Amino acid sequence: MAEAARQEIFETPNIGDAALLAADVGGTYARIGVVQFGGQTPHVSHFEKYRCADYPNLSAIFERFIADNSRVHVSNGAIAIAGYVLDDNVINNNLPWPVSLTQVRRALGLDDLQVVNDFTAVAHATNYVTARDVTPIAATAAPLEGPVLVVGPGTGLGAAVRIPTARSTVILSTEAGQSALTASTDLEIEILKFFLRDGSHVPTEHVLSGPGLANLYTVIAALRGTKVPALTPREIAETGVDSSDAIAVEALRVFCGWLGSIVGNLVLLYGAQGGVHLAGGILPQISKFLISSDFTARFRDKGAMRKVLERVPVSLIEHGQLGVLGAARWYVDQHQNQG
Image (cartoon, rainbow, N blue to C red; front, side, top):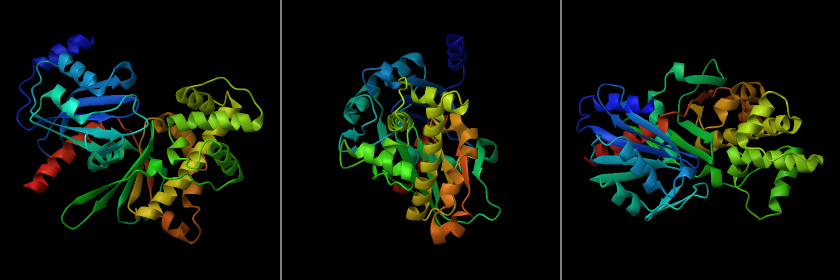
């Protein structure tokens, strides 16, 4: 069936000079597509999703995409990737292999290939998010105006800030996931102490990510003196949501409350009074649990700043093709600014 779909794609007209190859590469999945700009809303086609661990490097994933879509011809591209780009390499502990940008550029053979942080790309794509695409988590009757925070736990914790200005929109990239984890409750303090046995720096994403949920599950079980099976983050989410595993339920509760507290801190830190978009692979799986959790209470529990945070809306958006779309949007914006 997939092969038939590809044949149908090949019979469509040429995608044109305005088309870009765009990719969103996270620790678990790489999403690749072709983005064409025309009218107010760009169009994503030839979209494919690959599991990173199934390939020896990022170049191999692109080579598979090119083989799967051999009649697609583009000359420029953009990659949204989790991590920090330093010279030729991407610094990220969550990718299954090192990334050499030179190697990727050579494999693709494009005229131009640029790299952007993955959540910077998602922040660019939020301009295309409509009310149909979001699930309210913390609603407010009188929202404020200002920068918008985009944050989400996936394989790591990504965050970026969209800052509107009189002439354009500025996107501020962050490495919030690598900032030091802070704790507010007695249980969180105990968990943090447990993690500190292994080193003096515990990054926030050590808790607030898919692997972080697994860490919480293991540590809470140890603190409770309970033996638990080795479960994947998805399995923990599933057994926590359906209440079939008491430790998984507690891990989810801690996860959601801690997320609310950290996101509230980020709003205050970056002045993101225009709202928060939550993204990331794990949150859609637990959306109902998240809504009924302590997330909103912890998000707003900031002393004198409570009244401000009560007017900051928080919504959940599906990640889907946003990273691919945002990478292409970022690329176009960069070239327009240079022009």
